[in-house]
Amino acid sequence: MSTELLIILGFVVLLMIPLLLLAYSKSSQLMDEMSIAQADIAASRLVHTVEAVGNTGNNASIITEISVPPGVQSFSVVGNREIVFTVRKGSALTEIVKLSRFNISMSDEDQKKLAKGGTYNVEVAAPEGIAPEPIVNITIS
Image (cartoon, rainbow, N blue to C red; front, side):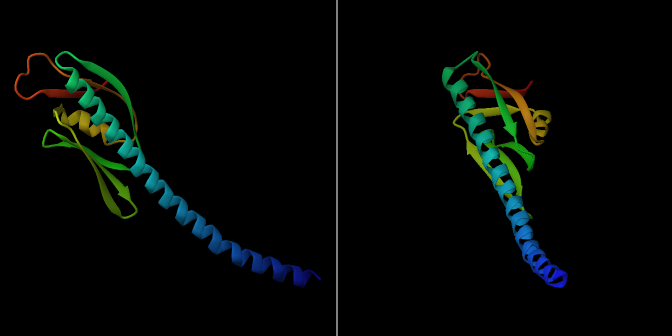
């Protein structure tokens, strides 16, 4: 009786191991997808805030909270109009790019801060007196 029970338990354990490995594999893929989705939301929120401040005009300012997922490898403002998050997905890197109609100014130090996971208070402001090409400043507070 106990031998049959041990054989049955052995088969159950053998069947459970591949299922657990599959579940673990899927959970890491899901985490990567969630990081990409959160980075996309953060980039969209940042660009929408830049657009709102830029449309409002000189001396406008908005402070918003941006949540950056832990999978982000880098953050940059490219060409003064693109906000780019680079997120690791497995062994590959995925870039999330959002475009703004307004020029964006952001210090290298603040860009490095946003490259780390966490929640940040971000001030988006349009300074006074910038004439032909409006510039929107982004700072981390």
